Length: 340
Ligand code: NDP
Image 1 (cartoon, rainbow, N blue to C red):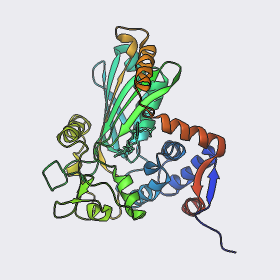
Image 2 (image 1 turned 90 degrees about the horizontal axis):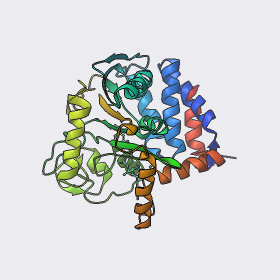
Image 3 (image 1 turned 135 degrees about the horizontal axis):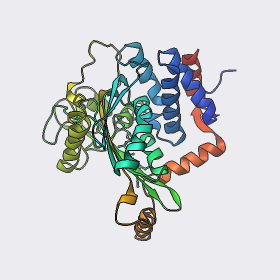
Image 4 (image 1 turned 60 degrees about the vertical axis):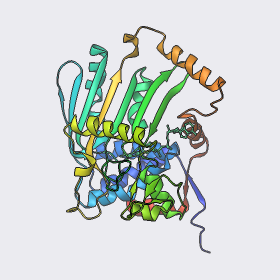
């Protein structure tokens, strides 16, 4: 009897991490880097950040196979002044580079009250919230931004210049999980656009343009010769510009439109830069910072905003922890095949 491959196959977090770790190791990452990347990817799947969960494994594998990224890289970390840390990811993934810098970042922010982390020569292929949640859990406020692959045209233009350039912010909240927002500065993330193309769904007009520069709701037309657009016209475009300046110019990384992996067939991961700013809120006027944030969020909810950023993610996480992470049989079989 043939199996229905679309049937759910629930998997525990630790089992998924172990499976993904085997894939990363098999395709050339070191064991410590594989553990960090596997945990990051499983966290995304667990929380329902599906555009950066197991869907991305094929892209990780293709980039590793093409030798565009060094899965064994060990980052070089330098402190420049009391509150500035430079991280050279040495053509490796951004998450192991950040993990390597973590002890120095914590020490620096405790000493200086604020720390700027400038990561260069790094491949970021995931959501940003997993990078920031540990800071918020430690009572710190943080911001992160990453430049990517040029696939977003500026308003009025046709040529892709910006990456989808996500921006994330995280803050502790008294009595509950941190508030984190994390989104692309394009009208839609590239991952979601590709998922829409795969599912043969149209996307809202304003998401992108086709090869002739006309607004299009067809994900295939946007992906083949067209471009995404920034969210919010000139406002989103300006934020995207800021991300390029802070995550690439300031760090010493490449701009999104300088990434050239044409010599690495199949490569998908952007090699640019990432900026993270970490702030100790106890240096501000109020010692009751997290309570003040809670007061504000209560007002926002009372005013009628039923869903705040990260509410949905924590709900999905709780469901995954109770029932297992819902993959399909097809996804599970594909991961097992890749791991062997
Ligand atoms: P979304 O437009 O889905 O927005 C995500 C953020 O907004 C989340 O914080 C989400 O909270 C919150 N949110 C979504 N809908 C609502 C709502 N109705 N009310 C209140 N809050 C809401 O994100 P994108 O598609 O733009 O980006 C998805 C991911 O892609 C991000 O994690 C981003 O970091 C990642 N990305 C990574 C890139 C890279 O180069 N590494 C490039 C571009 C994007 P919740 O999580 O609870 O749903």
